[in-house]
Image (cartoon, rainbow, N blue to C red; front, side, top):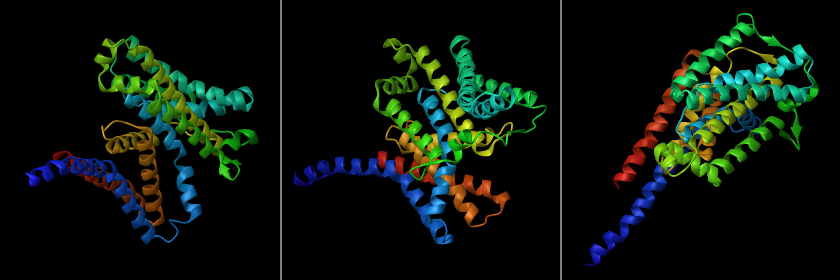
Length: 331
């Protein structure tokens, strides 16, 4: 009798322990990765290098947050790459070709992202195209527009951009880089909306069971339009920061962020008890990818092997988290 009671009493604690292990398995893999790089390179844990990792991850964070919002609603957005490009391109073009003051140039960049999101919304909500095909189509359209608008893919240079515009990528406030502050503000806004508001509950409800959400009276189409437009604008913020820092727009530059943004979102989802996209998890995913890229650079890995090793490490970390999660459920 007593042994039976002990067994029954132990199961909840074992279950709680298993859930904790599942939730923080990826954090453990992340800590191991940091330890490896710290051992391999004495410069890895220096304040300057860690600052570079954080600042270098801001644009990816913005694109990944946009993707998090869309995936949480049950969709996908391959066109965030185009939204980022339009944000960079439109902001520089507004100043270079139309002598627009820098505040209007920033608004022009954000408008470019809104156009991308609006096109996605029209295709998905009005025409009934699936999100994957709709955003893939927008991706192809945006790529062609960039190539045509730049005479075949040439760079747009504006080295004489106003200092106030460049301040967004190169300035500091109380010793903190402005672009990091911008990323932090957007991160907090997304956290409040997705994790702490009724709107976030409704967006997640759409993602988990869209039909049930509609039956419950949720106007899913309105939310879906808002989600895609907000995602486009968020990615465009990253593009504006890129153009402010480089003062050069390179067509199709946003494609370099697309797959990493998707990876960051699903890294974050693997850490959630319900395996759903979430803002804190996405942040961890972005930092993991930033640390991985930075550490591989510091140890001097051959460029041709870097992408392959990044993929291998990512797969191992995610697979380990998945195994721990399965074992915890079985426990």
